[in-house]
Amino acid sequence: MTRITVAKGDGIGPEIMNATLEIILAADAKIEIDEIEVGEQVYLAGNNSGIASKSWETIRRNKIFLKAPITTPQGGGYKSLNVTTRKFLGLYSNVRPCMSLHPFVSTKHPIMDIVIVRENEEDLYAGIEHQQTDEVVQCLKLISRPGCEKIVRYAFEYAKQQNRKKVTCFTKDNIMKQTDGLFHQVFDEIAREYPEIENEHWIIDIGAAKMADTPEIFDVIVMPNLYGDVLSDVAAQITGSVGLAGSANIGEECSMFEAIHGSAPRRAGQNLANPSGLLQGAIMMLNHIGQTEIAEKVQNAWLKTLEDGIHTYDIFKEGISKQKVGTKEFAKAVIENLGKKPSILKSVSYSNNSALNLPKYKRKPAAKKELVGVDIFVHWNGTNPDELAEKVKKIESNGLKLSMITNRGIKVWPDGFEETFCTDHWRCRFKPLENSEIDKTNIIELLKNAIYENIDSIKTENLYSFDGKAGYSLGQGQ
Image 1 (cartoon, rainbow, N blue to C red):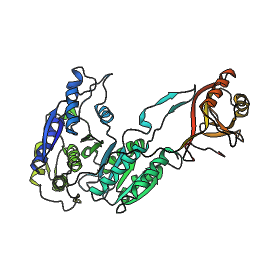
Image 2: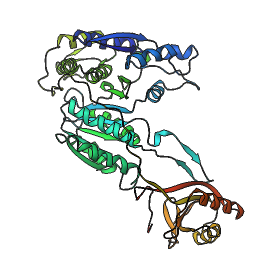
Image 3: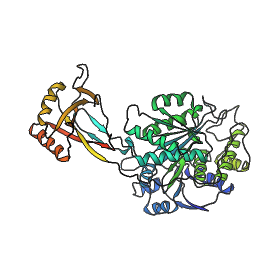
Image 4: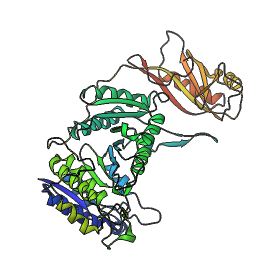
C-alpha cells in the first residue's frame, strides 16, 4: 500500500480528480490518500506560493503527489506552483507521453506513440542572465554531469519498464561541444548499460523536423531542458490530443503527476470536463510506484472506452463518436471496461510490477584540473579589432600573452575579416608562453593592468584542462 498526497485544485479540478480516483480505486490501486488544499484559495488567503507549509510537509512525507489543475489569480506577486514544486523538490525529469488516438481524435500522424523525457532543472532555465555592455546580454547555459546522468538513466529505465524498444537523444553538440557535448557523452555511456534497448543520437534541428514529419520512427526521446520544453508541446499538439495528455515530474525523493491542461473555470461544476489528462497522470503514477499491472488495466480500459465512442464534449465528433457523456459517466464507462482491451487502438503492456530503478547520483573521482589561461571580456565601443589588440597587448605580463580576440564567438584577431560585424562585447584570450605555468595571481595582475590602461573588463572566465583535455571552447586555431 502506498500513501499519496492528492490536491483537487480549482475549476474543473475537483470533478476530474474525483473521477480519476474512482477509476483507479475500482481497478484495485493499492493507495491511501492524504488530501491537501493548493491553488486559488490559498493564494487569496495571502500565501503567494499557493501552498501552505503543512501541505509541503505532507508532500515530502508521502513522496508521491497527484495534482489537479489550479488557478493562479491574475496580478503580480503570485508564483507558479508548478515551477515552485519542481524546484523545491528537485523534480529533475519531466515525462510527457504523446500518443495518437486515431481515428477517434483527428491527427495527421495516426500511428504516433512517443514519450518526451525532458531535463527539468538546469540548462538555460537556470535563469542566470546579465547585461554586460550597451549592446550585449548573456544567459548562462549550465549543464551538469549529475543532471545528465539522472535524466538519461530515467529515460532508459522508463523504456525498460514500458517495454519500449529505442531511446533517442537530441542535442546540438556540433555547436555547443562542451555543454550539449557532455549530455551526448553521458547518453552514450549510459546507453551501453542497456544493450537490449536500441539507442541513437540526432542533432536537434533535423531531429525536430523529423519528429514533426515522421514521429512514428521515434519511441522515447530524451533532451536537455529548453529543447524538451519546446518539443514536448510540439509532440502533444501533433497528436491532436493536448487535452488528453498527462505528465510526470520525477525527483530522487518526490514525484508529481498531473494533466497538462489548465483549470478551465468556465467549465467547472457542469459535469462536462474530460478527466483523461489527469487519469493519464495517475497511470504514470501507478507505473512509477511499481503498480504496473493496475496501470496497464486502467490504460487499456481507457483506450477501450475511447474506441467504443463514449466521448466527452471536447472530443465528441459526429460520425465517429457514439455517445456524448459527462465527467461522471465517462468514469463509469472506463470502470465498466476494466479488464478489457481495445481492438483498434494499440493495447499497452508494462513490465512486471517493478518500480523504476533510479539510483542516486554518485560523484566521480575528481579529474586533474590545471589552469591554462584566461578569457577577459571587454566592453569597448570601437570597431577595429587590430586597434583593440594593440590596447590589450599593453596589459600582458608574467608570460600571459594575448592569443585571440573574438566578438560574439567569431574570431576577429588575428587574421579577422573586415566584413565581420562587431558589437561592443569582446573576448580577449590570454595563454601562457610555451612551457610556462600560471596561477590566479597572474590573472589578477592582468586585471590590475587593465585598470591602469583604462580597459573596461566586465568578466573573466578561467581556462582549465581536466586530465589534460581542454575544458573550454577552443576557437579557430586555438
